Image (cartoon, rainbow, N blue to C red):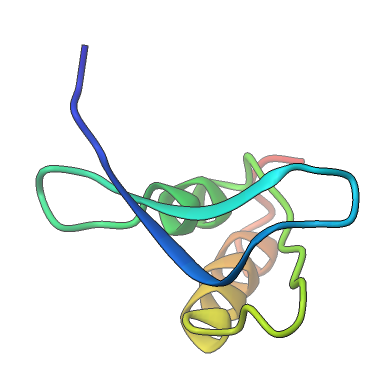
Amino acid sequence: GTRVRVELDVQTRDRYGRLLAYLWLPDGTILNERMLQSGWAMLLTVLPNVRYVDRLREAQRHARNRGLGL
């Protein structure tokens, strides 16, 4: 029941029709980033949607360096 804010980038859907969005939690963190930091997800960048790519790449690097998750 947690409310999230959905933020879209340049393109709203990929070529398969999947919604491309960033999900912001009430505490101001991006759910996508939290999942990457924990190793629960892998980064997929769909150009031209690169608004947070550096931040998300660093979150994935954090998980890999610590041997977390997937």
